[in-house]
Length: 138
Image (cartoon, rainbow, N blue to C red; front, top):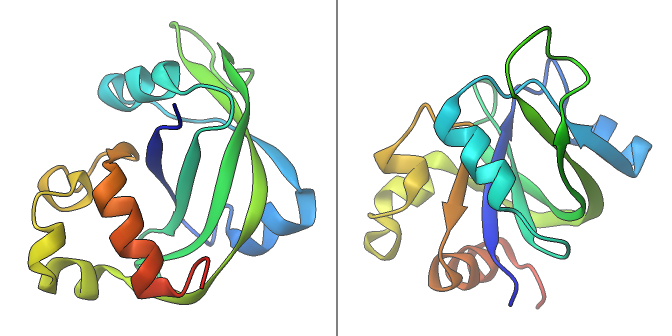
């Protein structure tokens, strides 16, 4: 069964444009234990919203897990992990953080409750709702 996630990246460091250009990219650099556990929980075929943090603060695309957790090659110590994400496609109408916060159907979303978490779960209901808001699959 497919699980759903949200992964954050600062567009100045690595944005949607680079994800699209690379096609498949290792999701590295996560240095938070809760986010690491979420990476470890990801399975092949799981989908994630690609979220621009700091600048933009919006869901701009969808990626898919194509390689499960392995040692993060950028880590200098510890048991940090990475996963490989493949570009699926852009969100036709980016969904902003403001829109998510204003929507009662999304009030319990990890993006709001755990705002500093860089990799978080998304429920199937939240996924479907955000897809409708962003015109994904319509």
